[in-house]
Every structure is written in structure tokens, then in C-alpha cells.
Length: 344
Ligand code: ATP
Image (cartoon, helix red, strand yellow):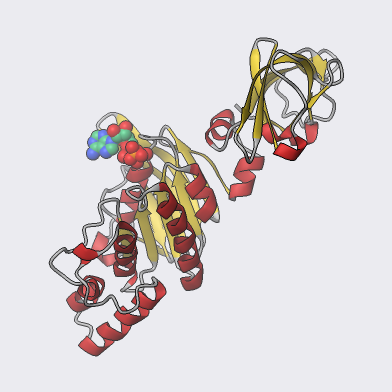
């Protein structure tokens, strides 16, 4: 099978396990984001894919070939890491052509490839500029073009946009995704920003404590989180306890909720996204509570309700905002169709 295949990859530093038994299959031409909090092992996993670190156990295959022990420069990779490390004494064109020159590609071919790449990153005509005269976003694009010059089999980026301000960063996320789709290049990006991952990826791989907690399409990660870590890490959610009573019915705060897809456990947690919480009249929902705070963000309105000692947040569009005020008693209705029973 082609693509990138990680099998039971583990990395230990002394007795500390930074990456624990990770298996993942990345089909050719797809875009994967490794996402997780600081220290979860994303960079360590990326470094093993790049050949900068050797796994303690497990194997890595690329295009059908076992590359676990293959040196970085023989893996045919394009890499962009956080510190861009463009060569400051070279022009934009010379930076992009660097790897081609080292490989002995004829001069005319280098120039043709540089022009192609510059057009692709919307910097046509910039070949003779000094890289020190570029903006942050332009430098970022040159780093991407430089990594792509050799037409790599695999494109690896570690926090490539983290040095950019928020607006530029969002624009570059869209650009990077469009470029990847245009080229059809298998791409892996490390990020700790869930919006960034959701914007760009075909598959989001959520990691914590050196392990993969869930690997799925962005919408599935959001709609069907596997566990409470993923549910809480991706977007915001309400994590509510449920129990199963003697007759096998699930109850939330003592009220039966028909139609929850239970996994067999007698008690656990459900995740309900704020946009799926409905505010209704007292006695009319699953549970009653009192409104403690209303946050009007212009585009959305968040209503905070305290019920059974727990805070529950409901989000709505301004036009459909519940007509409630702080201190008012309300009912909260949970929809079983959008309430996800979590594995742990
Ligand atoms: P961040 O987002 O902060 O970069 P990360 O998810 O990329 O975090 P890693 O850099 O992969 O995390 O680190 C995972 C864990 O492994 C951390 O606890 C880190 O301290 C540890 N670690 C990483 N490299 C080494 C090393 N060379 N020696 C010892 N421990 C290391």
C-alpha cells in the first residue's frame, strides 16, 4: 500500500515515553494535521517521520518502502519548520533554487522551476529580491516554495504559521490548503491551533500524552468526538454526567433522556455542543436552571445557565437568541440526536 504508514511507533527519551504506540495511515495526496496541546508528542512524531529522530520501536513506510532507518536527505521530503531559516544572503530565487543547485539541476531548468513556484505562491517577479526585504507572510511563502522545489513525496510543516499575526495566519491557512490541493502533495502539519487544523486538514489527528486520541475528518472530530479530551479540546462543549437506571434508561440530572446511543457503561459523560442546547420554559426541558450570564459577541450570543451545580452554555445566533435575562429560571432541553456519549 502506498502513502505514509506508521506502525506502532514509539519514542522514549530515557524512561519517558514521548510517543506511545502510534499507528496511522496517510493516503497519498491527503492533508493531515497533528493537533494537540504542548508536550503531547506532535513534534517528536514529526521528527521521526522526517528521519531527524529514530523510533525506539515501530516502523515507518513511505510509498511502499520501509524508511524507518533511511537518512533524512534520502527520504525525498519537503520541510518547513517553525524557524524558517531562509538564507539571508541569497535572493528569493536563489533560496528557492537552493536544493536544485545542490542536485546539479541545469541553470535554465532551475530558473523555469523558480518562476513556476513564484507564480504559485503569488510572488511572480520577486526572484531577484533580497529575502530580508520581504514581509512575514511573503517569507513564509518563499519557505514553502523552497521546500516544494524538488517535488517532494511528502511535505512536512511544523507550526509553519505560528510566527504570523492572526489575520495573516488565517489567510495563509487557506492558501496552504489550496496549494496542497493544486499539487496533490501528501502533507503533514503540526499545529496546536484547532481552527487551523479544521481549516486545512482532510484528517485531524488529535494527540494527548504521546497517544492518538482520535483521527478523523474535521467535521467528525467535532460532531462525534471519541472521548472527553477530544470533545473539550475541539471547540467548546458541555460535558454532562449520565447514569443508566434499573430499567436501562439513561438519565441526565435524574431526568430520562430517550434515544441516547449508549455504549454499555452504566455511567459516563455526554458531550453537548453549545449550539445544540435549547433554552425553553422551566419544567419544559431536561433540567431546570437559572441564567447566570449572557455574553453577546455580536455574531453569536452565549447564555450561561447554572443547573444542578453545573454550568451549561447555550449558543445562538442573535436573531434566535432566547428572550431571557440574568437570574431568570429556564429549562434546558438536550437533544439525544446531537448528544454524544463519550468512551471515556
Ligand atoms: P509543543 O507544541 O510544545 O512543541 P509537542 O507536542 O510538539 O509540544 P514534543 O516536542 O514532541 O511535544 O515533546 C513531547 C514530550 O517529549 C515533551 O514532554 C518533551 O519535553 C519531551 N521531549 C522532546 N524531545 C526530547 C528530548 N530530546 N529529550 C527528552 N525529552 C524530550
